[in-house]
Length: 460
Image (tube, rainbow, N blue to C red):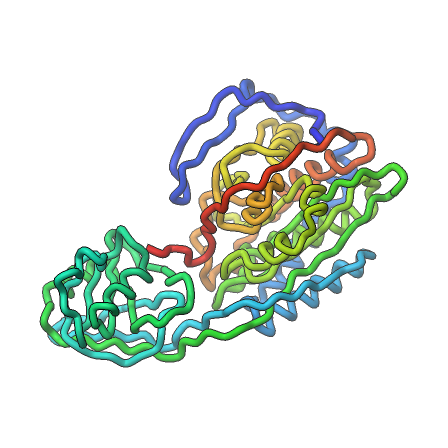
C-alpha cells in the first residue's frame, strides 16, 4: 500500500457524541502552522475550477433524483456525457432493486380525541382502512402480549427494545388489525420496517400524541393508508476509468473516488449529494491531464438513499483480484453546505486507514491541521470498508438544517467549502497516484458488516 510522504503521529484521542454515534478524533502531537503548498499539490489545486462544481450542482438540483425514476436516469445520462467530454471511457452499470413508494394518504382518527393527529408512515407500511377498539400493547414484545387478546383491535405500542417490524408482527399474531407506535422521546418517528412483509396497517405518532391516546383507550380508532406500493425498479452506477499514464511504469493499484447521484423524494439534493457528484466530475476533469501510475475509477452511485445499493452492487461485482488491488475509496457526500459544520472523515469501523492518512497529511499541508476522523456509516464508503478496502467518507458535521428537505437548494452551497474539500481530496489522491511516490501495498482483510445508517434506517 502506498504511503504519504508525511507520517502523522497520533498522540492522543478524544471521545464525543455526534450524529448519534461515539466518535473518536485523531489529534496530532503538535499542530503545525499552514505550510507552503508543495509543488505536487499545486498541480491539482491550480486546475480546480470551483465554478464548474457549483454550476453542476445547480444543474443537477433543479429536480429531485429519486432512485429508479426518470429524473435519476436523466442525471445518469448527464454524468456520463460529462465524463465522456473529458475523454474517459465510461460505463453505465445497471442494477434492479425493490422500491417502496410511500402512501399518499395517511390518516388516524380516535373517537373523543380533541385536536388533529399528524401520523406518519413507515417505509414498507401497507395500505388499509381499519378500525377497532384502541388497546394498550405496551412495548409490543412477545412477553408484553403473552396474555393479550388483540383480535379485531388497534394496538397502541411504545417505541423501544425491539424493531418496529417486530412490534407490528407480534401484534398481528395476537389478532390486531392495526398498530399505532408512539415515540419514546421528543420528535417525529422517521422509520422503516426493513423489508416488505405481510404487516397490518401501521402509523407512527409523537410521544405527546401517544400519551394523549393512552387516555383514550377503549375508544374506536381508525387508520387509513392508501397509495403505498412495492415495485422492482432499476438504478445505475456511472463509472469512468483513468488508466495509468505509462503502463510500463505503472503499478497494479486502483483508487476509487465516488459519490451518490440520487436524492430523496421532494428534496432537490443540492448538497445531498449533487455536491459530491459535481466534485467527482471536476476532479475527474483535473486528473485527466495529470500523469499517474495508478488506475483511478471515478464513480457516481445510484440508490444510496434507499440502502447504499449502488455501492454494494459495485463492490459485490468486483473480482477478488480487483478488491485486492483497490487500495483506497474516497467517498464524497454532502461536501458543500454553508450551514453545516466542519469537515470530518468517517470510517465504517472508526479506525484509521490509508485514506484517512493521506487526507490528514493533505489537510495538514494545506490548512495546518489534520482533518479529524470518527466512526460512521451513512454512506457509500461502508461496502468498501466491509470488503477490506481502505475507505473514508468526507462530510461536514453536524449536517445542515436543510438535510433531506425541499430547502436543500443551490443557494445554501458554499464555494469556499467546495474548494477546501476538492483541494484536500484531490491532493491526497495525487499523493498516492503520482509516479514518484511508489510503495508496498498493505494486506487487507474483509471486515464484519457494519450498520448502514442511511436514510430512514431507524428500525426500532
